[in-house]
Amino acid sequence: MTPVRRGGVAEIAVSRIAEGDPLRFDVTVREGGGQTRHGVTLSAADRARLCAGHAPERAIEAAFRFLLDREPKEAILAHFDVSAISRYFPEFEAELANYIGDTIS
Image (cartoon, rainbow, N blue to C red; front, side, top):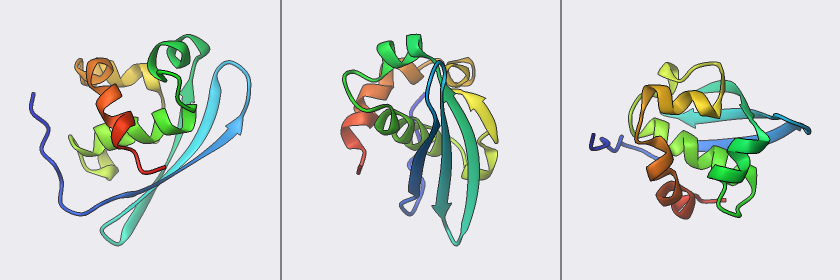
């Protein structure tokens, strides 16, 4: 599947709100005059596999950029674990490294 790049640039704010396993994050996406908030978890196993030596916050931001290339912010689940993304988009893990390299933070 080739992602469709959406017009405009979303502002993605990622805050770690809990340590441990899993890590918990609050994510706010601002785009097009509106915003959405999301609760996201990332297990230690997924962190080791997906973060490629980067801060978990950077990987979460990259995951949201990946999602926003495929759906509007309002379609992204309000609460989810990062592992759920691959169930909807099987290419997620293979493409995440490209998005981590493109993140702004």
